[in-house]
Amino acid sequence: MIRRTWIALVSFVLLGATAFAQPPQSPDGFVPLSSLPPGEELPAARFVIGAYAFFLVLMLFYLWTIWNRLSKVEKDMQELARRQGGAAR
Amino acid sequence: MKKLFVPVLAITALMFAYSPIAIAGAPYESTMKLVQKIFYYHFPAWMALTVSVTVCTVASALYLFRGSARADRIAAAAAEVTVVFGLFGLVSGSLWGRKAWGVWWQWDARLTMAFLLELIFFGYILVRKYGGPGSEKLAAAMGIFGGATAPFVYKSVDWWRTVHPKTTVMSTLGQTSPEMWYVVWFCTVTIWLFMGLLLAARIRLEEQRAALDQLYLAAEE
Image (cartoon, rainbow over all chains, first blue to last red; front, side, top):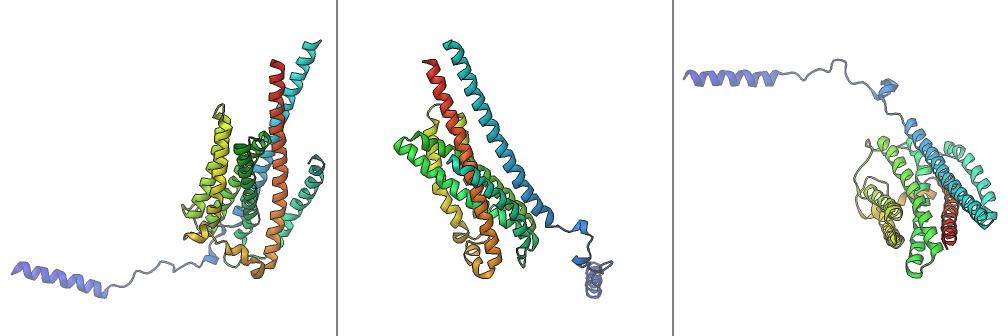
């Protein structure tokens, strides 16, 4: 009997608490996106600049590798021609 | 070819110099706004890749079935150019996606297939470099396989559900925004010309290497 009364009392308190509960209040309300400080937004400019800068760096690097490899091959050709010339003499 | 190199270089340089002005003057896309401007080099890079993949595939087939050594050199040059433009396409797409989709990468059909295409041509280069004698033929087969994959990459956005825009974006751009259409094709022609110059320079490197090998062989004899 005491147990049933105790369960009923607890249930009443819990249900009452739920029924009268108020939704939690946001401390300052929602902050509109336009008022966020610039540092917290995701700026598009850095992605656009990043993409074009990457293109420039990648192509310059690739051109440099072609030029470097071509110079090496041509140097080897000259070296070989010089050695062959020396051997012929 | 040599006579054309300098005039094409001059035209390409002028077009590259004008492209930022054209891109800045193009209208903003309504939902993506500024970040959509990546499109003006992103799409042309994939178009350049399409051409270099085609060159590599045709040249690989010519080498494999007709034994043309010159075709093999062209295929090797085109594969490397493909990797360079593919790398730019993937990185620029990732930067665009970070802002537009909120993620750097998405394992959807288009992105995954584009990544695999890049890996195939990267594999082509590795096979040629480290595959030892006879690796040219294996690489040529990889070049043909890569070429066969390319149409699937292109159509993947129409066949499967992806986050990437469909091919209709380009086919309808002329009607929806003629200004954007003009700028993107201006940039595409610029990058095609630049790709042609890179390819010519890279073929020259392969030819010089072949000439050096011949000289070494002649010296040994």
